[in-house]
Image (cartoon, rainbow, N blue to C red; front, side):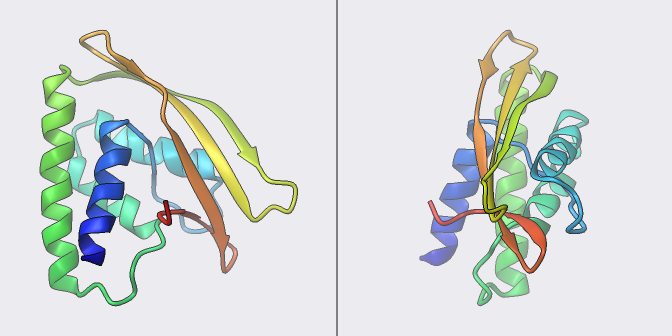
Length: 138
């Protein structure tokens, strides 16, 4: 059931075009967002999903097989959504607001699709062991 929740959170993020990226821990939340969106824009959906996982707080009990199944499902959903809109024309970071205590952040993005649709999603991040991670506790 927890995997379903993770799937729903990611699907919401994907369908509202929230960006995420490779992080190595030293990247800012906005840099993480833009890295993921660059992968999505270029059509490398599987890498985008993997980057999202690398930069998310996930259930530690998720097995490698479950993670592989979820990756495949997310990859398919992302590709279907982007293809339905003709691809991504442009992605811009609108803002990155880091809290005063430096422990959380919100990144707002603007995604323009080739069919003219524009979405303005936002992503929440938390600082975990010195690395920014997407906050999936919604």
